[in-house]
Image 1 (cartoon, helix red, strand yellow):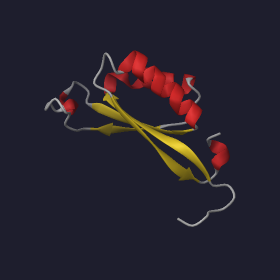
Image 2: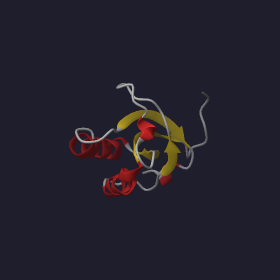
Image 3: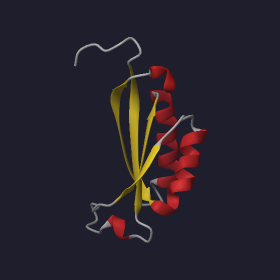
Length: 105
């Protein structure tokens, strides 16, 4: 990738897939950890336990947020403490380059 304009920067894209009943709680945690925005969409899939995780009443949501490493670490910590042990939640993170970096820092 060639160098972009000076307003390009690197952030973490954190993606969370969870039961839709957890949506409001997840968004509250994401915001309280410092995220300035997110995208929510409906999701369906098949989990490692060989059960269709989208078969849960209300389906699943996919929440994506672009955040600094520090904010991603806070959200991940909350997921490990309050969500992973109790719910069918999957999450992953990767670095991305974004335009208008000031929106995410």
